[in-house]
Image (cartoon, rainbow, N blue to C red; front, top):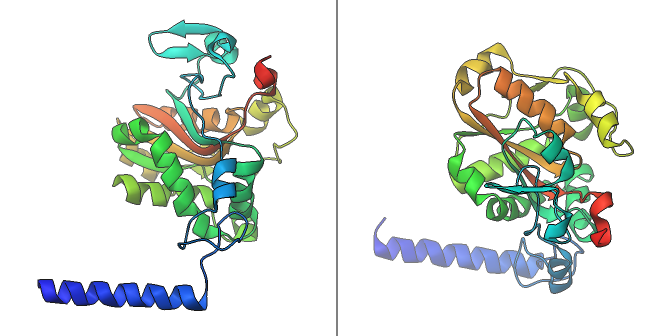
Length: 263
């Protein structure tokens, strides 16, 4: 495109954006307060988001209040007690945000209220937190939803995050790399052992997909990581199908209540 045409096209885009903002003033993604630009947060909602930063478990990504809460330390970093006793099948898990009231303002509408436009802002946060994982990933795959839940919700939030991350990091995304073989019960009120039992054998890799991941490093994407049971079950299925390694990247991580308040 010639310089004059580029300038003209840019002017048209700016004029269109200005007209849209005049007709539909930009609103905060979290609270609907008026903001300066579409797709952004107001100062209060932005300040309420708490990033997962060090110290955290180098394996499962659970945040620590202080390094003394780690059960072990090795060349890879700090480990929580469960990971020190039995390392997970995935190499590393990272999350962008702590799953608290601030993160829930974005996560819950995204999951349950058709706010699919939140996928890209959340994916940008995830790309910041998981840059090293994205750099090493050969392919990105979402944690799959059961088909009945997909029909009820009409979209797969993990798949939307994976697709947005693929565009940001320029990595291939395979939305159907994993399949949920059976429906699992809601896990919100269950402990770690109950969660692990509920998802045992619930995921698999279809034969046609297994040929596509042999020897590759897979980045598994989900919206919220709690105990890591779902990530563990998915990682086992991917490794059994021939993947070389599995990392996990979530939008938010639920802190371990046993580590709360520096206990």
